[in-house]
Image: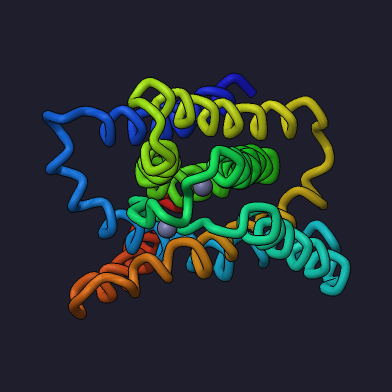
Length: 245
Ligand SMILES: [Zn+2]
Ligand SMILES: [Zn+2]
């Protein structure tokens, strides 16, 4: 149980690291590599959902597919709701559309949308560990790959709204805390993995396909798209390494 919390804490700190990275003048040039991390994360997450999370979920439902898949659909739609219905302007990557985010309210709702998403990042990690240690590790890696870009995204939203660096860092701390809260919620309500796991599958699918891939596809050139496939390969590699443990 303590190890789950440690993994959650590492994921939360990666959010904070992203926020500090964005606001540090010295390390800022290194941020150009972040879209590649998003591409790697997207491929890894897609492979994890289809090859590990959904198959494991079905074993908890002894072959009944419809109820768990309905939970997966709910998870998918929940993130659509919070990221794009409640917060009408949100996308991964650096926020450069200053005109779209003049208002404080737009900024608050966008940061809130990300916080709901990161809460479920935490739920995903913890429900993976609740099902099986190996699945937990795989989901932790799937999530951590987009955690630094996520902290970076949320801080750039705050900067674009004209707020100081201090507020931008605070926002990354907030979404990090939401991640840890998600982990602690699952740990606290143990036994709900039958529901939490398919729900997380839907959330993960949404993050990979609707948050990360559009950002990857916005970049120029073919190479970054190939990195998505490298993410799938990385998944296979990690999985076979974990199988030997
Ligand atoms: Zn924008
Ligand atoms: Zn996330």
